[in-house]
Image (cartoon, rainbow, N blue to C red):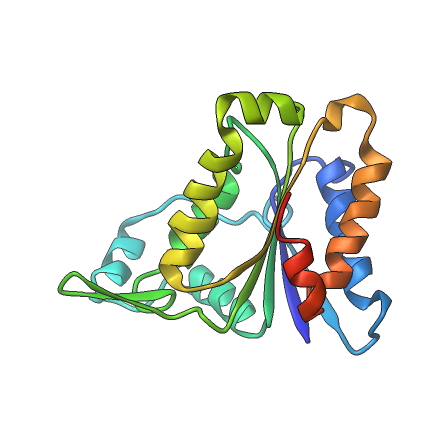
Length: 204
């Protein structure tokens, strides 16, 4: 089984990078036959700007731009998609959102024909890992847990039919919790291809 881990953080020494590495370690920890690829969107200089070529592809007037087709092929090779990102303004960074805007295109992630939507990514399991500086009480008090899941889990992945098997927010990261979060990342990784564990890790 193969996982694509997509990461969006400009600092290669960040906790986000360490957590992505921990997830990768967990994926191969109990089954050497599992594999992973890490797509570091900053290092690879992915262009997140939705442009005229993307609009033409959305309207079925052109093929997907070459850089988008490369990303779609990466996902097509994967059995699981793992997104690792810091929480910026209670959502994912613009770089990752732009990657989704461009890559999860009409005709590939879903078909929207005359207002009827067909979901096309039911074969792809999704694992979401956000890293936040605030504590759980802050998220709970302001309704951020449900807001983030409505935007991302439901608004993006349910629309495409991709089941979200893990939805974790690793919080209070400014309070020296890095080691705890990295260990949690290993556990998340070990459950990516573990049917029993996927359900257990679905609640943050």
